[in-house]
Length: 150
Image 1: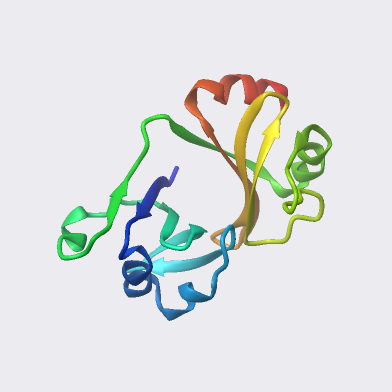
Image 2: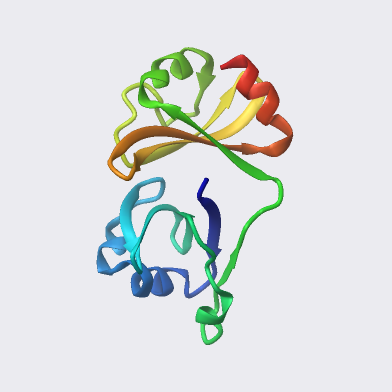
């Protein structure tokens, strides 16, 4: 499984541009892109202006960011579940979102904050190595319960 890295800070956008290219600036919050970091495939989700979540199989070395006002970390409490794209319709029947977000007909390379019954999660539709998936970011404490309910 790839690692989830959160990158944030005043220079977050500048560092993202240097790592992933100029096109990263065109992403709106909760939009994503599949790209390469070195020779490794990764997914980059823009959470807000200077905050990004990166799905990457390796380690993001902090030394790269020493001269910038940015931090990169993995959260001990965060986990992810991947579902086949076909399960998105089942998810939409049991999950709720707040306007202006929508889960029904969620476009590719989009994410939405949602609740599945009482479990808060982030639903991210994107591709991994060309395969469409739905990725759920959820607290580790809720993984077993969520897996059982799905």
